[in-house]
Image (cartoon, rainbow, N blue to C red; front, side):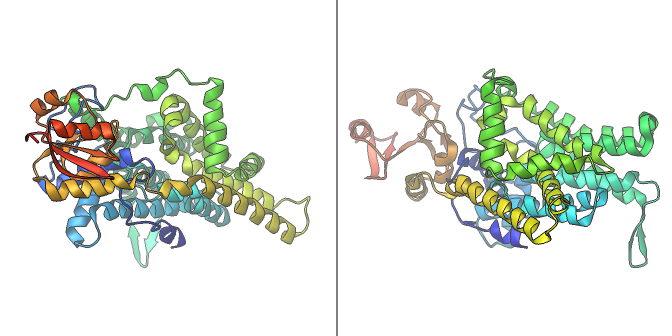
Length: 473
């Protein structure tokens, strides 16, 4: 409940905060569903430029993750009629974050004890980095919740004598198979990076059957059916190359993998500083002492191996974008929980009070310095884009196409509620030929105002200027 309430902080904030570019692109797909219908096989957003894919995209196609998240955001907005579309986007992520914490508790408790499970859910809920990204309009947190749900129900399904009973009603084993299948396939569709976190499932299956797991035909059915939707979607996407953002660079586009700067960025800037708030590193270090005591240490270690593989494979992506670490947050929460559990049970220090005070000090320091890193993430980077966007929406036709120049960042274009271009892709006459009707600039300079000699000024003030590209001054 507290984790949920904390994530309501600035719920009504416009999409102009940290990583607003990716959030705007995500929410734009949802807005197009609301305005033009739910065509799941042809998701569209507002950017018509060649920036994402390197190709002109006049239809505004947006082929990344399958739009499960967008259907939830747009559907809830239309169903309830309260809150804005953007607020529903944040709420979808908030609920996903809460469910991720719940599944993490259930998983960890099942393979250790409830106290350790509570610690894991605690860190997942309250690490400041996770509070911010646990309310952003991104599909990543929903993917985390889905893959954790998949792991949990997969675990229940493969257990030999496990029975789940509610009152006098016993759930058949097939129920857990279906739930595991639904959650896992949804996770793959939300973000294929979830494939890395099938390793815990492999470990669970190995603990159940040993090497004979390869002979278990239900497992092969599970693998085939869970992966099939992703394979189909990725194949379907290839018909619309203009809508597929260039993504090869995410692997090692700048050659940074395993270079000293890679370890500095991932190990220090992200893990130590941003996520752990310096102090949390002590708990991460202590976790390995506690890990070797656990009977099912290999299961928890599989989360760590999955995280390391993911970060190393998508090296440039993880260095370039700090939101890429959303996927490894369950692992960090688990290992911080292990470190906390070890510290409280440390026998050299006899006094429980001293151990408790020391742990509170470490956690408080971690959360404080973590908050110092992320508190500015909530801020609006440039309020003028919001004001200018409202002006464009008020002064131009709904079907107008605009150039909302923001050096390629679609955050500004999103505020206009129009389709168009987030940069000067070509010279203005060429842009007019492509269909541009209006140009809007924020914080205009004297040189910008010189365009008023060629194009009609619709409205101007120190925050923005709007030009009608179809009319002379």
